[in-house]
Amino acid sequence: MSKLIALIILLSGIMGLTHAASTVDVLAFESEQQQRRYKALIDEFRCPKCLNTNLSGSDAPIAQDLRRSVYRLVRDGHTDQHIRDFLQQRYGDFVLYKPPFSGRTAFIWLIPIGLLLLGMAVLFALQSRGRRQQAVALSAAEIKRLNELISSDD
Image 1 (tube, rainbow, N blue to C red):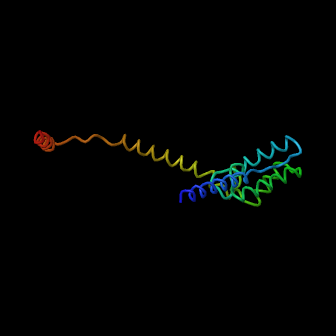
Image 2 (image 1 turned 90 degrees about the vertical axis):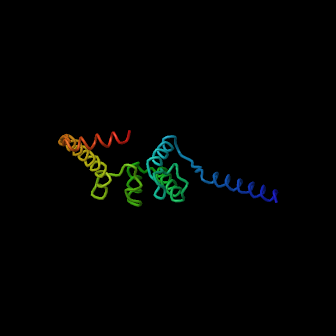
């Protein structure tokens, strides 16, 4: 029984290694500049499937396809802006880590500013409310009752 478990562990380890090896992209570039552009671009784009992971750090199949597309476009001599426009047109503003300011993306840019202003307004209101409240003096009967409560605890 222990040999069977050891065999299963060994096979799962081998399968894991082959899977890890299969996610490495082996790409040939014509120049060092193309390779640098490719790496900069895949670091710049977000994986459509993953949460907050760029293309270079994702193993998702869609990220692999996008890396191949970026590679093909770089090899074909397209400019970085053309590649950005191509991916943005195909996958929307989500694929960009820095989406442009437009009517569709205004909420992405304005919500943090709005929340900051709202927080500052709440803090200002709480501070001014605290300053406006005056200390309330206790009546003679309330002072007597308070002293009775304090002395009864001793």
